[in-house]
Structure formats: C-alpha cells, structure tokens
Image (cartoon, rainbow, N blue to C red; front, side):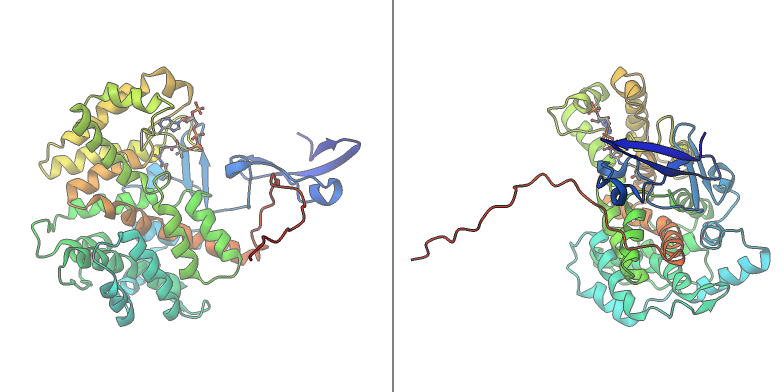
Length: 425
Ligand code: ACO
C-alpha cells in the first residue's frame, strides 16, 4: 500500500497521507482536504471516521476481537480483578503486586462521598431515573475535584477517588429511590462485594456470596472499555473543550443512558416482558416484529455498529448468566426466553444478512435482575464498569492536547433571504 491516497475532486487533485496503526488499521488523513479543495467528508453517525489515534483498546468487529492495552478480554475476564483492569487501562501496563496492594488500600480509603454529594442525592425526587441522578451528582463532584496533578498510590487522585466513590454513589441513589437508609462503605470488602453490601444490606436481596461478587466484578471488566463508542466519544469531545473530568464523565453517563447504547440492557428486559405479556413468550412473533419496518420493535441487545461476527463480551456474559442463575437457584424464564429468541434470530435470514448478533447487553440484564437490581439500575452498573475506560480516553485526549472537537456539516437549509417584519399593529 502506498503512503498517500490521491483524491480528485473536479480538476483538483490532492495527496493525503495514509496512516497505519499497530494492528495495520489504515486511515486516510484528510486534514488538508478542505483547505486544498473546499470539500469536507460526509459520514453521518461517524461509521467510517477515525476521530483520534488511541492506544487504549483494540477492537476487530469482523473477527470478534477485543483487547485492553493488548490483553485479550478472554484472558482478563476471570483471572484479573476489576481494579487491576482499571489500572491497566489508566496506566497502560498491569500493576505489580505492590502497586496493586497500594491501589486496593487507597481505593478502600476513598469510598465515602463528600457530605454535599449525599445532600444532593437526598434532595432529588425518589422517582428520578438513576442515570439522571448519577449525571447530576457527578457534575456536582466537579466541585471537589483535586488538582489533576495530585497523585496517590500511583494514580491521579481524581481518578482514584472517582473509582472509589462511584459504587457508593450508585448504591445511595438506589437506596434513596427505595426510601432505605444509606449503608456506608465497608473497607473490609472487595470492590464488588462492598457495592453489593451498600446496595442490599438489610434487605431480602442481601448476599455475602463471594462467587456472586466475583461474577459482578467480571461484568465490570467486560464493560470497562470499548474504544470510540458513543459515550466515550462524548467524554472525549466534552473534554476537548477543556471541561473538567467529572463534567466530561457526566456527559458520558447521559450518552450511555440511551436505549441504543448502554440503556439497551434495561430495554432488553422490557422487551422480554413485552414478548411474555403480548404473546406468551412467542419468539417467532418477536422476530417477525423486529423485521417489520413498520413496527417500532427492535430486537434490543442485538446488533452492533462494529461487531459483525460476534461480540466476545456477549459470549462471556452468557456463561456468567448460567453460572449466576444456577448459583442463586433461579430458574429464570427470561433466560430461557432470551436463549430461544437468540436461536430464532440467528437462524433468520434477516439477521444473518445484516450480521446481527447478541451484544453485551443481551444477557447482562438477566444477571442483574436475578441479583435483584431493578431495570433502571442496569445502566448504572454499566457506568461503574465503563468509568476506567472513559477516564483513560479523557486522559489520552487531553495529554495529546487535541484540538477542540468540532465537526463540519453539509448545510441543507434555506438560502439567504430577506427578513420581512410582520405587521404588529
Ligand atoms: N433489530 C432489528 N433490526 C436491526 C437491529 C435490531 N436490533 N439492529 C439493526 N437492525 C437492522 C436495521 O433496521 C438496518 O436494517 P436495513 O439495512 O434494512 O435498514 C440494519 O440492521 C443496520 O442497522 P443500523 O441501525 O443501520 O446499524 P447501526 O450500526 O447504525 O446501529 C445499533 C447499531 C444501534 C446497536 C443497532 O443494531 C440497534 O439499534 N440495536 C438494538 C439496541 C442495542 O442493543 N444497543 C446496544 C448496542 S451495544 C452498546 O452500545 C453497549
């Protein structure tokens, strides 16, 4: 392959540099295109646009490959802990034993929320969506942001504190919505076990089962990063205006909330409920509805912008769904329905042609529901997992001193016309 790509527009010809990534991904650098030809590129939904160079995560959707900092997701999910993976994403290398121990201790020491954040949660209506509450309090946390230069236990103190506090924030938001007293963090418990304890202590959903905590930790790992998805791109874009870390993360939370993105895990459960309510679990009806362009029904948890073979996270989560439900002794009718729906869709020409496969959200909601999380909390769990990825990208973007994000457009509105005042008499 040459080192330039030649673009001809009318009588103008320009040579654009070709850049190649470490996995041989090829990009045409069109930064001079507009200056030299007056034209811009047109790519709605950014399906074919490389907005940045990044060394965080490699994803090959055709082959179903996902690697954090070079490590395959299949090797991390299980043997590694979420904190280890967070360090890996943020720092670029795995921590050694001493680094991990110091990080673990510091995380445990920073789990308490500042008083004003607790007051903000209490001031919110009980029925506010947890993702709205999460975004609101995250923006407020900008107030207590440490100087970006402060370091503790080898990490930026801001990042360490946010990692430690997000589960507390999520648990308090949940307990507030339920009218329950808050349960403070317990430094004797692991990251996921402490979160479960703060969520459910004193209720019939309380669990001290380490295997369940381990499964949740693994789910956090599977969600920890996914390169330039909608919410991560949002975090980078907001950060490019030099907005603070928490403010950029809050924007990521609201992007994640949408049902076409992280909100799909809630939407999957609602869809399965709908299939049961209207058709008594008839998966054929659901597949037909999903194919019908006149219906608004989509197979939630299916399809992905970049995975066109399989989503490696979905494979791992499916295994966890069986494990967790087995462990809880639950015969979840929804799990059986989801498996039936997956089978029916995967054999259907419509889904085969369009390369639509289950994505990360298809089975995660079933696990969360079995653990007792209400559907509105599912995307909050996604956000806890995604936090290290968002922060890694925010850092990378800022460290590179990227220009402010500012796309162009093709204007399709009215041409210039003269204002005529209405007769106001
Ligand atoms: N059910 C039925 N048809 C679908 C689905 C689906 N879930 N997903 C895509 N299609 C169809 C589209 O209608 C379109 O058909 P057409 O070519 O006949 O017009 C074709 O497949 C291509 O779909 P697009 O919407 O153009 O694909 P895009 O890459 O823009 O969207 C997305 C990807 C948003 C994930 C989409 O597949 C979808 O809506 N899935 C359901 C929601 C979901 O699960 N989101 C979570 C994604 S993972 C994550 O963000 C964490």
